[in-house]
Image (cartoon, rainbow, N blue to C red; front, side, top):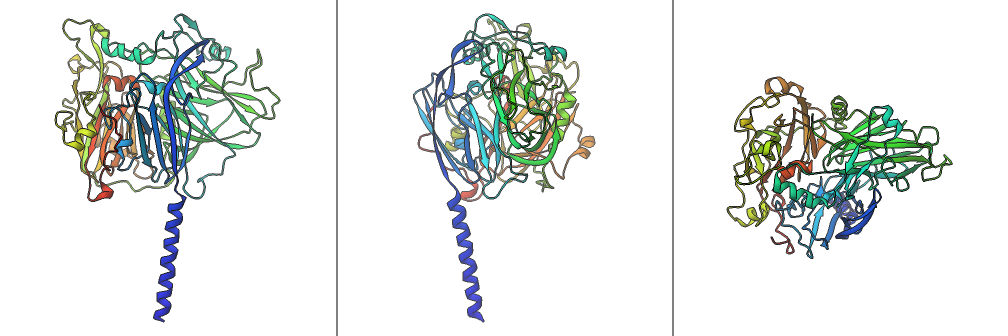
Amino acid sequence: MEALKDSIIQCLLLLLLCLLLVGCASAEVHHHEFVVEATPVKRLCRTHNIITVNGQYPGPTLAVRDGDTLVVNVINRAKYNVTLHWHGVRQLRTAWADGPEYVTQCPIRPGGSYTYRFTIEEQEGTLWWHAHSSWLRATVHGALIIYPKHGSYPFPKPKKEIPVILGTIPLPPPLLQRVQADVTLQAHGYMATPREWWNEDPIRVVRRAARTGAAPNVSDAFTINGQPGDLYKCSNKETTVFKVAPGETNLLRFINAALNNEHFISIAGHKMTVVAADADYTKPFTTSVLMLAPGQTTDVLLTADQPAGRYYMAAHAYASARGVAFDNTTTTAILEYTSSGCPTKNRPGVRPAFPVLPAFNDTPTATAFAAGIRSPRPVKIPSPVDHHLFFTVGLGLFNCPPGRRCGGPNGTRFGASMNNVSFQLPTRLSILQAHHLGVRGVFTTDFPAAPPVQFDYTAANISQALWQPVPGTKVYPLKYGSVVQLVLQGTNIFAGEEHPMHIHGYQFYVLATGFGNFDPARDAASFNLVDPPLRNTVGVPVNGWAVIRFVADNPGVWLMHCHLDVHITWGLAMAFLVENGVGKLQSLEPPPADLPRC
C-alpha cells in the first residue's frame, strides 16, 4: 500500500514538473531593432520630415503573449534625445526599462543606443509604446498587442483583429489652409476652420513655448492609423480603409495616441460592444460612441450587420475646458464591406454614410461612457488602506522673471501642478539612478500627501493668490506592499478641464468619479467596491474628482502625470518612490550595463 502511495506521489510530481516545463517552454523572447530617424512623409499637400521608428508612421506593431519577454534595441539616428515608454506594462522589478526621460533613465543621445528588456506578466489586451522625451510621441508610437498565454478570449473569437490608432501629426505649410468641410458636418453644426500649420517641427515649437511661457502654438491634423482622412486637403486617396465581410465580427483595438486631445469616436450605422480597456477585460456593453483620452485603449467587437456599403469611422475632440482653443476638425477612416462592389478609393461626389458625433463639449456622454466600464466579475479590493492621499491637479501661472517678457496671460508664464508642486525634471541624473546610487540633491522625498492650502477647488473665481505653484522635483515614498487610496481633485484655476492621469508601472482600481469638490462623508457611499474597472489611465472629470486604489508592489520610481503633453510640459506630474520589499522577487533589478549616461 505504501509503495502505491509513493508511486502516485511520484507521478503527480512528474506531472507538475511537465506542466511547469510546458509553461516555461511556451514563453518566447522577441527581439526587435527600432531605428529612430527622420523620415519624409506627405500630408495635407506637403512633404516634410517627421521622426519615426523604422521609417513607419505609426510605428511597428509588437505582438506577444502573456509571459513573453521583449528585447528592443533602440538606435537613435535622429537629431533629438529620445526614450521609449511601454505604456501600461507593469515592468515588475524592471523600472530601468520604463522609459520616461530623467525619471528612470537619461535619454538616448543622437548616435547612441539602449536595449529595453522586460517581461509581460499577467497582462493581456491592447497597450502601446511611445516616445517619452519632449513631444516626440506625436509621431513615435505604435501598438503593443498582448495575446492570452493559453486558451482563448472571454468572448467569441473574432474573424479579424484591427488596431485603430488615433493620432496627431504636425504639419509645416506656411500658409493658412482651409480644411474642406463636409456638408454632413455642416448640417450637424460642426464647421471645419482654417488652421495655421507650423513652419517648423513640434520640438522647436514646445521649446520656444517653454522659453517664453506662452501656450505652445499647436496646430495639427488628427489621424487614424497615420492618415487624416478625406475631410482634409490632399488626403482623399490615402484615407484609411478597413475591409470587412458581411456578417463577420471583428475586434477593433482602439488606441488614443493623440498629444493633447481626448476623442469621441463613432462608426456610421454600427454599434460597438466594449470588451476591454487598458489591457483588462470588462463587462461587455454596447454603445454607438467611444470616448478615449490620450493614453487609453479600448477593445470593441464590431459586427458587420448593415447593408453592404461604405461607412465612415469618425473622431473629433472632446473639449471639456471652457474658452480654451482646440482643434475642431474631424478625422475619418472608412469601413468598407467587401461585397459592396465599391472600389477602395473614394469616388468623386460619393460620400460614405457619416456617423452622428457628440458635441465637442458633451461631458454627459463622456461621463456615461466611462461609467459603463466595469470589471467582468467581482474583484477583491486591496485593503486596509495604509496611505490616504489627496492630490489636486490643475493649471496655474508663474510670474514672469524680472527683466524678461513672457507670453502667458497678462505677461505671466503658464504652469501646472499637483498639490501646488510644479514638477521639474532633473538634468544631471535620472531620479531612479540617483535613488539607486544614493546621490543627494537630485530629488527630495517630501511630496505632500495633501494640498498645502485647502480651498474651494472648483469655484468659479479662485483667488489669484493661489494660482502660482512652486517648482520642485519631489517624490512620495511608499513601502513595498502598502495600500494606497488616492483622491485626484481637479481645480478650476485658470481653466478647469478633464485630466487623463496615468501612473507608470501600475494598474489601479477606479472606485468612483464625480463633479465638484470631493467630500469623503458624502462621496464614499458612491464607491464601487464590487466590480470597479482596472485602468492605467483615468480621466479626472472637468472640475471634478476621481478616487483610485492600488497596492505598491512594484519597486522603483514611477511617474504619475497628465497625459495631455502640454500639461506635463508645464509640470502636471509627480513620482512615487516604492522601496524594495524582502528578497530578490520584491526588489528592483540591477541597472543594465548599457543604461544611457546623462
